[in-house]
Image (cartoon, rainbow, N blue to C red; front, side, top):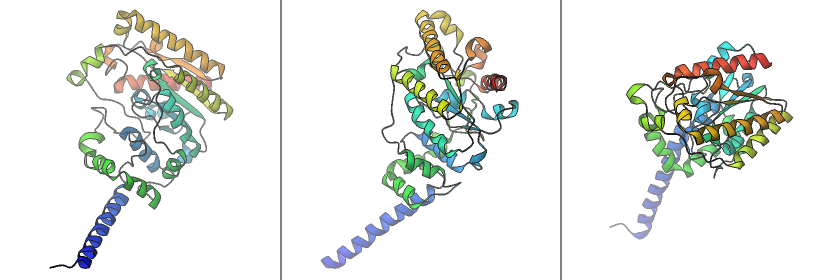
Length: 318
């Protein structure tokens, strides 16, 4: 029978081996899978994508926003069709409100040659304002400069502190998160955009047929004003893009039309006051339902048209 000291030694060795093995697991897989910096898988994987991209000094154009920035503008088309735009990085992520976009935008300081920022939005992005509960900007920026498939002891230890969430994301990655362009997964193209291939029975009919809630939060408009001022001070061109919305819903709901129009007037005023560029794509493109995945997300054909329109607008103004 084991005496007490021997029992303690064996238990200690087992615990140390367990903790060491767990850390080695996290250290290795944090090179290839997102670390839960924000505890939001879309944003955390976008941070991994940014870390892994080569030649950050060549990026001259940033696309930012919620899923509208992520899905409704094809960065690759923008690169191919614009004379002014050379290299695009889309740092958008699902669900970002404007107050969070303001925080996310601070990441552009690691790109030394940014000439313009494109913010793709619609009035739902200006509803209830949110802020990140856990967003250590300087720590994240250091992570972004590590290089492709690289980590270090500090960021691996951060992942280790959140090992349950990290492991859950790792195990569910291919099935639940990675996805492809046939759903709202995280299949980034080389610029970080995700053009959607959702048609027919795969369309969510509830989201296609019902309008958004109409609440607007003044904190989001204040955040937009600060962003515009900051970019102006840094001599970075700011393009604010109002995305298309399903016209049948606007025709049917007067309060929806009024909310969207008030949003357009207010954002246009903010952008103009700060010498930015304002583009409302809804009346320009006049998209029919065949281009929509839901009430305001576009499929790959719709996002191609928005990218071409933005490309033309940039070249006209630069």
